[in-house]
Length: 459
Image (cartoon, rainbow, N blue to C red; front, side):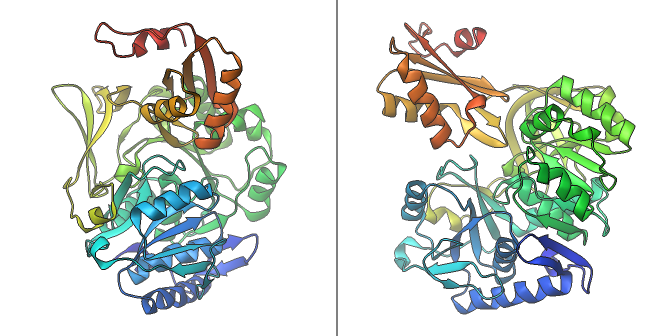
């Protein structure tokens, strides 16, 4: 039984939306049933692209896809049109849905849906266990997708609701976007527990953020490191937030200073602060640090979530995760949607680390070249390739979870401004998260490859 088939019934509050107002679980059931019936009438087991933001309409459309067994790729509703068009051309979806789509309204949701004609030879049968597709790199429009099963969605929602002890009187504010695995896990885990969601897009820097918590009795918020940096900078914790009980953090490493600060703040305010670790490839969550152990285990990613297990590759120290929430594998083209489970419950995280004597895991580095910024995974090689194509100069990219650092081999200082603007637009990053440097010559290894260690030593 999947969590979307076993929701709480009746007049219990399910969703509060700034446009639609309060929605009970009975109302949500009715709207999802109507949308699912509409999808089913458009064809059996179709693949589509769902452009989303935090709203009741998008939530209904997502849940209707699960109920009707249509398979959606979740994407940001403000994805640049050129990137959206490239994905549509590459994956050839059977339908496209979103607020700005040129089509008719999906019953129960109100989002616009447009059917597309796809060559049958280009659209093989979809694997029966495939439920959902998510991008591996946030909102950059990369064609590399994560294939998630119905079992994985259910397992992760159940595990998260268990270790966070989510109950029917909890109410979560959707700080994170729903097309991002962490944001989606907040939605899934709260629905699994019969809790409520306050769905709205509100900046943590806006006065409306704290006002929303106070007005709607929000009990939990979830954030990536950047969110907690901003919350601390604005002295969010000093405001009157009587309903708040739980803070969760994932999407990259929170620096030790802020971990300690929020650990102490949480203890003083009677909150629970969960530092967590995960990947889209694990349907969001892999591990967490129990709040009562946080200040003892600063820097740790914690222990495995319920039903999961963490081990280390004895050859290179890579962190391996084993659990029912591991993805089926990647998709690089439409034909890959027909593939079955290729990983069989074991995920190589690409991170290296160690475990202490109590079984708490620590990440010390990465085998692959990517970093997480504001919750989005950014590939260094992709940044280099795109910038070199744009600027026609040699480029090296590196960084850590708090900053992307780019080196340009040029004497033209004006190119630094051009590069920063390009990165902000192409990779949807705030300019404060990116540092651009110009150098006379990029350092190279004897093999002729770029010497990233030398560059990062000067970062």
